[in-house]
Length: 186
Image (tube, rainbow, N blue to C red):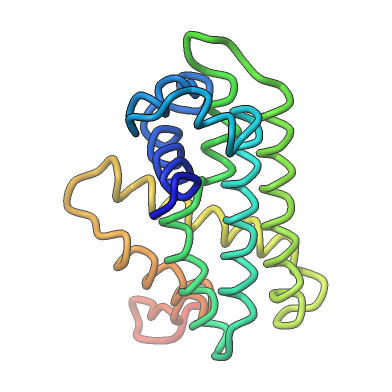
């Protein structure tokens, strides 16, 4: 793996574990046994590193949504692709935390990335449900993020199972419920 890819991988992990604000380029260099100059050779700033990670996520989203298959298969691919990405929502939250204070420009980048992802998904969902694409995209993004947060913070939950159930529910809806008298209550 080349140095640039190693930096991206290390930053993705550090941003997820410690947050954007609490991660320094010096920390990343030290983790990889590099000099700070080696980091700056590939990325002019921590913000540039975040931009590269967010762009990778955008490309992964586009690949998942444009692959052949059913809506269910493409949404499942999108949900699974989220695992390797810097989550824009988490990046947005962590740009304002940590010992170093906030970074408004990085927060803006993360928010733009979140909006791009929502728009990419909204275009696909608009075809399935005209007039509802953007709202459905936000709801779906919440399902995916929630599945990852639950699996990360609550032992015993599998992200794959949560995603499968979430995608099934999202695409098919709730099955009709039977009332006490055995009739469909929907």
